[in-house]
Amino acid sequence: MNEEFHSSIKIPFTIYSGDSFGGICDSIESAIDIVLAIQEYHKYHNSRLVLIEDDVSFGLETKKFLNLEGPALWKSNDLLDNLKKSTSFFLADLQNDLKRITVNTILNLILSIRNDWSEIEWAVYRHEGLDIKQKDLAEKLGVSQQYISKISNKSKLRLVREAEKNLKQLLHGIDTTVH
Image (cartoon, rainbow, N blue to C red):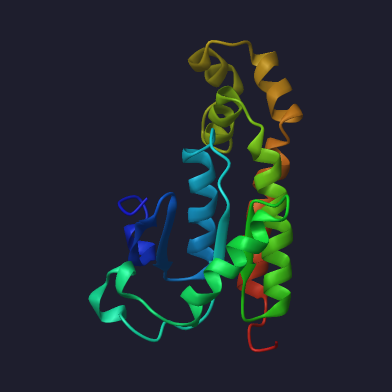
């Protein structure tokens, strides 16, 4: 993740306790891209992820997650505990209420839909929107063109892509000065 998203990461992701990890992204939008990538890369493990928009009071100059202190980090444990009590995969605590509600709702719906996808559904998702014809994709994956079409509809691939696109557009348009 650190290598693939290096231009969007201020403080690299670091494992700090068992299966817990943390890092700092340069924006909410890049953090959401990373959350979506984490689910895809760890698709056979149910991950719970929290996103916090708050201050880091100490340690930023070291560029090491384990040296950081501040409200953003203190909130993470509480949010993770709340998330574990729910059926959601994701919980954000953002400074703007409209942005928080939007991100939590849409991202949890996307993650819920994608959670049950098979390897072939992920493969079709990765290729959707690229300049590859359904027939060629079917050949590449060793299935029929009709099966690709069936997967696209059954898995709600287009709906997920549209939700991802709309979430990004909403985030760019939400007035973050109103709380």
